[in-house]
Image (cartoon, rainbow, N blue to C red):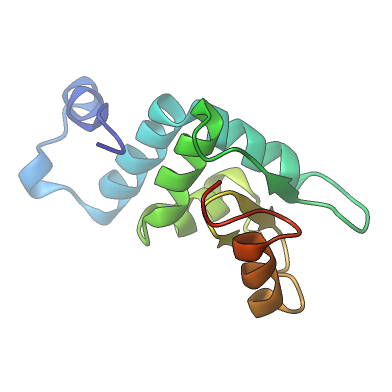
Length: 127
């Protein structure tokens, strides 16, 4: 499960999961990401503050604790925009293969990057 703390947070906040407002849903998911995906949240926030030609770029082993959290966050169409808004100061999030991403403007040639993270030289499909 991506965010196992959701029931606990809902209880703590007195939220009824069957009757959440839009504001409560967002607050619940953001807090759950903070608790359940702390390594990913911290990395993305730090990357949002970088400057320079490779600013915001990251490459992580998908089998590592942080890699697994980054996959869980990026794989969800619901979580990715919330992470951008709340942890990355509105900067977009890019995710390719299972191990590489960027906080900020997407790479100029995203298709080329996808290929290079599948077949080298950046990473490989079985990484």
